[in-house]
Amino acid sequence: MAELDPVIHAQARLRIMSTLAALGADAQVSFPRLQQLLDMTAGNLSTHLRKLEDADYVIVTKTHNDRTPATYVELSAAGRRAFEDYMTALRALLGEGS
Amino acid sequence: MTPAEMLALTRAQEHRVEDFYQTPTTIIVVTWGVAWTIGFLALWSASSASPIAVPAGPAAAVFVVLMIAGIVISGVVGTRTGAGVKGPQQVQARIYGITWALGCLAVPMLAGALFRAGMSAEVAALYFPAGYCIVVGILYLFGAALFSDRSMIVVGGWILFIGIVAPYFGSPGNYLVMSLAGGGAFLVYGVVLLVARSRRDRRMVGAPSRG
Image (cartoon, rainbow over all chains, first blue to last red; front, side, top):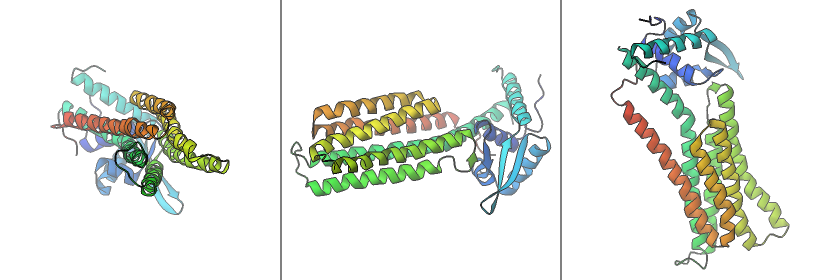
């Protein structure tokens, strides 16, 4: 049986990864928008993003919109592959195939 | 959590993102559905063909206010589509939204020049409905290509067809065609979008969606 990636296999992180993947290739999402799409508190989202960042699954960019600091999050190439592998493993467990 | 619950979680998030991009389209479609149905019906009501005699002034005012409201709402909603996301999809969605407002603005702008060149009220009565239909029909077909959405081909093709055919009914018959077949088509499409969404959400009931 395929092992499920423990970095992704947590409710909050799976939801983050699904959202980033669904936003499409090369999409960067602002922190508040991501928070809204997930209904997560800023603190909770930051904690889980840090874990995903440590695994090099997401890239967090701090930038400025005019003078306001803004944080953008995107899936890394490794993150996208890990998410696809996770989904394949999950479907295999459910006997759906990929 | 079981694998099935985890899979349901990912689907719920995919739908959330889908709605994030789709909701603005639904708002724009319903806005134009209401604006066309009531606006063109008002113009027709002011004509001799109508069983109830509505004064021309108020009827034209209703039409103008609804068209301006449509341009403003689709412009605001369009430019806000995908706000907070940077990427190719967001750029596409934003260009599309702005094109809606510009296209619908182009029709009255061109009419201004045509009036100066001597366009009569009778010709204008044929020009406005046809102009809007051609712009909107092509916008839908553009959307169909952009989002690979087949339902938009049907709506776009139909609206374009109405725009080309309605002027042949002459005025004021064309207003009625525009109101019922044009505005009506938008409303039907708006309902189709809402039904598809609620059906999808009903399938998700029972699955955990928040965590």
